[in-house]
Amino acid sequence: MGIEAQACLVAHEENQGKRFLPRGAAIIVLITLLFHHLTSFAQTDIFAFKNSPNQIAVYESDGAGGFSGPQFINMPSTDIHAIAVDDFNNDLKLDVLTLCVDGSVKVILATGDGGWEEPYTIAGGLILGANDLATGDLNSDTYPDILIPSHNQIGDTQIYLLTSTQSDDFNLSEIPIAWTLGIANEGMSGIDCGHINSDNHVDFAVAHYNRHSSENDIHIFAGNGLGQFSELNGFSNSNPDGTPACIVGEFVSGASADVIVGQDDGGDPGQTWTYIADGMGQFVYFDEAYDTNVADETGDNEPGNGHADAFDFNGDGALDIVASASNIGILLFTGLSGGQFTEGELLSTGSGSISCPPSGWSTRNHAPKVRNITVHQIQNTQFYVVVNYDLYDIDGDLLNVTLKVSSDGGETWNVPVKTVEGDIGAGIQSGANKQIIWSASIDYPGIDSSEIVARVLAYDGH
Image 1: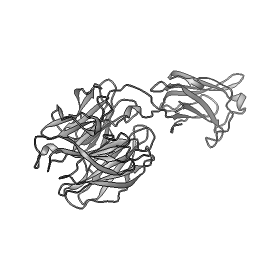
Image 2: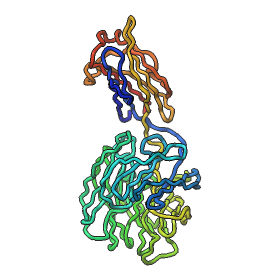
Image 3: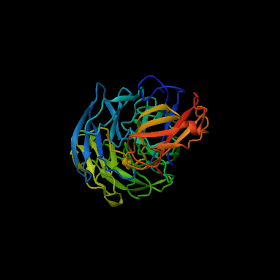
Image 4: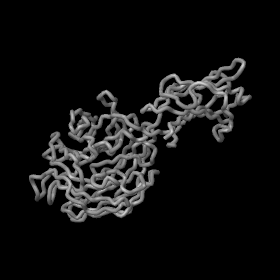
């Protein structure tokens, strides 16, 4: 099936996809799009990091473990606090999101030709906390949503949830959490999404970082696929001096997401540890993971800061780690079998908040796109309703298009629609200038009614 999304077109004089009917009753048209499963589509993967207070560096993957770049995105008049990479408008191009020091959240859409659109704001006034963000389809509508951990000076915590409206906007809410932070130098740090339990909904893990304690908890939140979460039993990382990094992915088992934590600058600077998931939200310690500072195994040294993310950049099935280490630079740790990693390869100088795309981002379900819709009536010896539209399916699926009509403003869909022709039925291909012609006077005499509503549905069978 899929998840239904609707765009409503009403008689209106403004040129916003809304059209007058030239005569007779105004007919409202609801175009219903059912999301389809994407099969295979080669895409360009990237990672991005905060290169300076007002600049983002973007590196493009060649699919074999190499990278080109960087491209630079300059932000206007506001410092960057944290960033995320994802396809925020479902066009199979990776975009960049920034959380800024003024509490605003901005999206920078990719143009597809190597360029970037101007940033636009989707939220403001947020309380800052961790220098990390996470994205994932948290409510099963095929569009990525955003998680932002936050805390203030008196220890209150919140996790902001920005839920996509499937357009250019997001709805802001908060996820209730049952724990607070009690002392200075304590707060939420890394956050990441993944399939932690076995229900196939997107979950997330967030690190409770305590710089002056050997106990640093990782909190696990299970999603129900509707944008709601319940806290599971997490685990404590008892390795020295903190857990600023928190990376979720199938590093060892391949069945459910594990968690890599650590990368602090104290104790063993830059060291990280892997905890294996059992598919039920429980974790056990596995082994050391990667180290951003192998030259220094003791003390308080800056190169251990906790910015890292994971993605399979060389297509071998093992997740690779891109990590940011102050005074060293951006390091690539290529994933090996069994949750092991190579030594770090220096990719770039600079350091800061860093983000890779979510695993499988290009195989999310995507919605067919309907554009340039017009509706008009023809009355000769019979009365016809004509719907013209352009139809696009990003992976070229053949669509099954149907038309439904209501005589009571959409309360029920009780009008018989039998006498139709044009681009309707099975096997409809993507393309421009699609047309449906309905012989309304044959199927429904007395068509002149202001309550008439027509509905076009496109299915791809997934």
